[in-house]
Length: 407
Image (cartoon, rainbow, N blue to C red; front, top):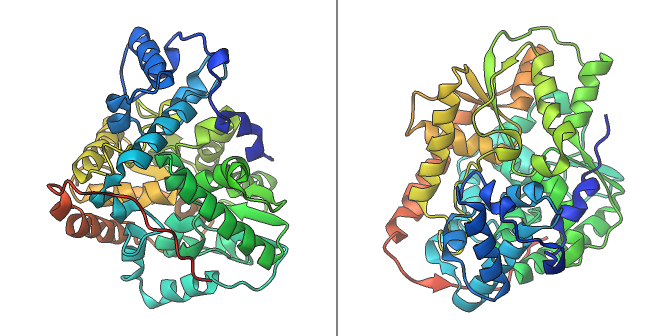
């Protein structure tokens, strides 16, 4: 199976007011906002009139569900991100948001790196290699912070490139931070050109969309083939290159990546087909596939600014929905979801255990694959408590200093 992430590039184009019939359906189908079509219509008019819509600035998860739902195939999510960008330029973000900015010191992923055991530390160091290669596997920064997920025979023989210093800027995109995204696009262009790479395999669904559909709009210039890894893993199973030796007899539920919906039902089926090939029975949560809930809750908006109480509330909502399915495990295919939901299990311990799909497939194939999810989740939770909770009452707003990339 081949799925080209560029097939979704129309969902990342600017909002076109002349193509909107102001039906309000896009926002009324949002799994988070829960508003009427008339209210959605009003909000779109407000944004086009240059007004701030604080309900969106605080609650929107910038998960792209509204763009997928739009009957005119317009892109209301891009209009909302323009609203985010305007608010940030004029007022900045809360200081507590720094902990979730991947290009800032002491951010939540950098915090995780401080606690890595030696085997992961060695792997992460090797990812920073700039030795030229025609093809490489880009893990993304979430999987770099959970590098044990890459210590899997399924990935044997792959050349890893791209540690924390090569984050794709997905968080910046979902916060509407355009100037910062241009800086990232320029930095990554230089990096890819230095590698001389022609093909990039990506385990992260978000990263595949950002590299294919977003960064080129902000100055990313390399002509690079983007290859999502999940369909390749499914093909390995279907073709018999990977043999299922230890099938599971679990009922599981799937936490979808926010970006999977833009690639359509064919892509959303891929992780489910992998799990079914491993013997799992899938029970969907009430919010799944195109109506999935983001694991980080209403974190990205300028007025939420990664408020930890909002993040906890949003993640626990997912865990409760997973519990309601009666599933024995929650399966993710996003490293960020793996760690975020594992962190929240410390606050909601009756939820099912959380596993990444690489772990399930690896175990089903008879491989030895580490399981450090709950411990890494604790590291993440500890970072939020230490670095964000003391700033909850701090009303200072900041603009980011220019990025200082280190090659």
